[in-house]
Length: 471
View 1: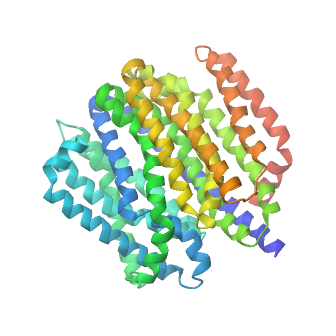
View 2: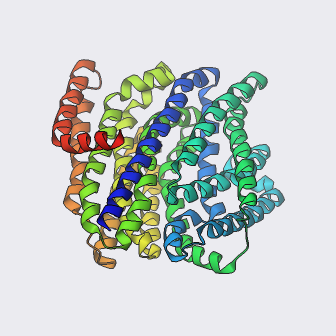
View 3: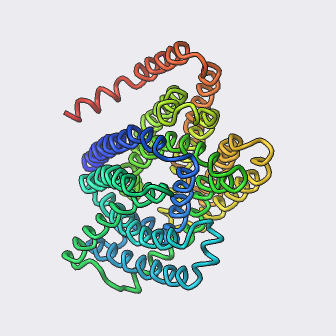
């Protein structure tokens, strides 16, 4: 059994490495092309495209009913039926998206006003939701089957396709160039969704099964409010900034956030490899093995955050140029917020495993309400930079809430909690010192080199072991 689980963590590590490499490669392509896009588009165009993406992220949660969250337990509770179960979640997602699309078409004028988007963008959004839901559920299936190669293909195809289609549409569209940016990421999603649907049909996976639907909704439905609220935490900033400060400010903030989201892409890749292994190991009671592997995992994540903070000013100048430099003050709070989000995900996974997701939503709704309220109250006074700090504060509240839920409500003690929170404290201290040197390149990078050496020495054995096994 021990050998099997050790093999599992090695497979998860391998998947995590390739997920991270593909995520970094994909984001690198995005970063390289961003300076081109920002110079071919106005900050207003960029802000409108970012607002469209924000609404997409929120509505995707409703359209998929968060059913991918139920895949982790379904794999355990329905052995040998997982493919059919995933097919059932696909059909339920299509049913929900279809109903919402019909409603959107009937009431397109008022919905257009509420979302602050044209009727044409509403139709494009509906198409994107059908395609994005298909991709979302398919990626979840691949993740829990450890089929990381398919997800890597999806990542690379989406990235290259987005760049290619965006350039194509920029060459065609003269005015309102935000359409080029939006169609640039909708078009490859549609192509990819068609490919996935054909593959699922060949497997005879699609089905209508009320038993699966009821099971999935029992776990995932309470998490709809959790994930929407989590998206409010990340997306409401730009929506409020767009309303209060204008699309130009939203464009500046969005570009800074896009840079910081490099971390989130890598963290999601790490979670994609960690979560399936965690559920398998935790289900068999090997908590010692979990704690053994979570410390270097968190250290790796902390190092990524430190690196992102260090190169922040130079990255913003490269990505957007002088007109976006006003947003560099948002880098540190955004990065720390994403780190807090990663750390409290360790506790959410326990809540999901125990099928106690009703507690999860309560905490996130409260944190989102705090964030939204602070944004509305403070952005008109202090400007868009304070949005990053209100979001960080909300993430810290959410971290404490999930710690309380697992320890007090579920009475589950898995991790060494002080060590996990210590990671956040350490990165915060580094951020404060590094921030003092944001106008001085050499001291800032010297500090980063020093920290790199310290981390390398501390985790030398872990690094050498992973290198040997990766050969």
